[in-house]
Length: 324
Image (tube, rainbow, N blue to C red):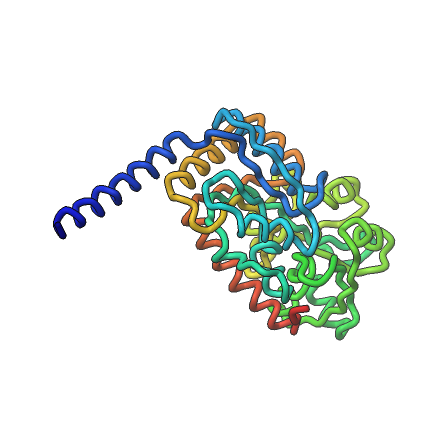
């Protein structure tokens, strides 16, 4: 009798494994929803739609973009973290959604790392250190020297608490020992306008937001806050080349699923993303926006996310930013 029960349990377990494997092989059987926690029209939205088009072609099923902006990306992120882990609800996010918002919002109600299964890091939007063209400094070292001489009076533009431009300004101060005055703005465009007018001394801003002004000579780019140069700004050195390899931070994007999503499904989705990003038409469309392809697999992405969280928490502590 006992042997019969044990045998039944073993058979049932084996059938469950086979059923799960069969489900992964037939996945996807219906449309997939990719949730974007930002409004339509921005860099994340353009990236999501471009990747979704390619994935739809590869998988043979529609990938539907659903924009759920608000609450510092918490609305969209929370929806995915609470979704069924079957591969049919995906998320495109970065540092704000996975690290910064959960750390700074008391009622975020989701864990940006434990609540998700990493599928693929897909792209990085470089940030550029820009200054008004009438400033005398033409290198990062000259800027740092000028900031030290200014004795805490030089200003840098940010686009709000917990923004990447704010954290890059903090990181520059931590790594160089300079003191700067933060001037917060509601977005990259008003910050760029005041830079053009010389009302603020410097800013780290997304490349797409300032690319045309830099190319027109209306703003001077001192460095790209990354380890390598940008294709669209070939004459602008990276922060590593400028002598500051530890002042690098991009606005990266990755695609994930709810925690507990089966590895077979994760691997199938990653393969579809990798194939999509290898398509020339996809790469050209993404890179034309000033975005760099930055593909990493599930395990690499998970490790990158952990390292990013460590750095962000260091900056939050250094700036004495508290949850609200």
